[in-house]
Length: 476
Ligand code: NAI
Image (tube, rainbow, N blue to C red):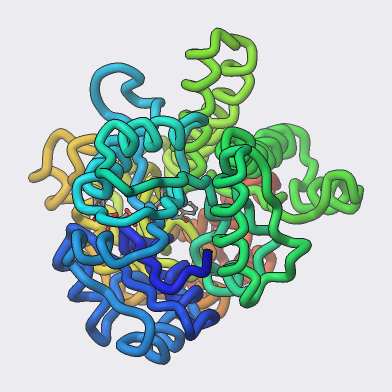
């Protein structure tokens, strides 16, 4: 079977970039990305795309209107396609059974039901969203229970491994593409058809095929291993601070062992993003349901360390500021969960800001890519705060880092944006109250230079100060 028309349901951080790259690399395939959010589709069709990813805009501009289309007409998209990619959100369930841990599959189920309702010819349905093991089976059950005469379905698992901030590069040159399918003649044919789409630009040896359950579990396993690596180095950072070891030196020594590898070994204020926490919790819940208690406890600890790290960093800010931040102005640099994205989901900055505001601090946030409305919406989310008025009293969003820092007691780096490294810290120091503190939660700044300017510097995994150095104003 040759795929000529693809429909992707879900025009988000995964569906948008993934389908843009498919359209870019496969000019003979018509790709339509559909979404129930008319607003999001309008943004994809405008000059200001709904998400920021380096390289994305150029690709969209080249393909849009040619073989890449964004549409709010979900039914027509489904009806016309040979292959349908489901790329809707699978957030942590916030109600009922499995609350706070299980993945909420209601959006996936809605897609399966819509496909069954609308489709008039056979289709390959590709599960790209991250799901618990056996979700493909549930999709198949829903499709089969509602099937129309003459229509057949094959459901594949094709999890996405892109990382936000490097999505286009990851999609153009993936480490691997994973396709799981039913172990039958029809299943193998469907796997082959999807594999042929990828072979337009991905070397054949990088396309791994396996059974559906292995494929689904591999995605959860990969994210759990990645998150575990960060929690491992973050746990070590606490030991470093207590002993005088330097976490960067330890990471370097550990990472040069090729069995461990040096990537993803950077200590920080903790991981964020929409995936790591959700997928590890999803794995924990799966293990609990399978009565694998010890395994569940093992993976839960990855999340516990991440929460501990965010709390530990926030507590250090409070301790250093003489055990009170009430009415003190504190600048937060960076609100996105990592650099080169405007995504703020589960960002460490949200938690650090929340903890400081609970102590009465006035928070001044600056981020080069996150809009003011987005910051306010995260900080006033019902899961985050009980008193919206208090948030609006204590929170200021700034459009300029120097304005954000002026008159503050402390500057807190929460995101590793490149531009933070090259700011004029002398100018910032002069505009701050003294003693002026920098808390580098990403280990990106030149700490000695800051200390020489007069800052009291605190970071993660390394002791820089034994006490506060007071300097006469004239010496700076
Ligand atoms: P997202 O929230 O950015 O986008 C999902 C989109 O699906 C939204 O625009 C929503 O309106 C739409 N949608 C929901 N239900 C729909 C329906 N019934 N019909 C049509 N549209 C519908 O989510 P994101 O970040 O793109 O994630 C999608 C999936 O990919 C998730 O399962 C996630 O775990 C997984 N994933 C995400 C990665 C990331 O970096 N964001 C990386 C790898 C996988």
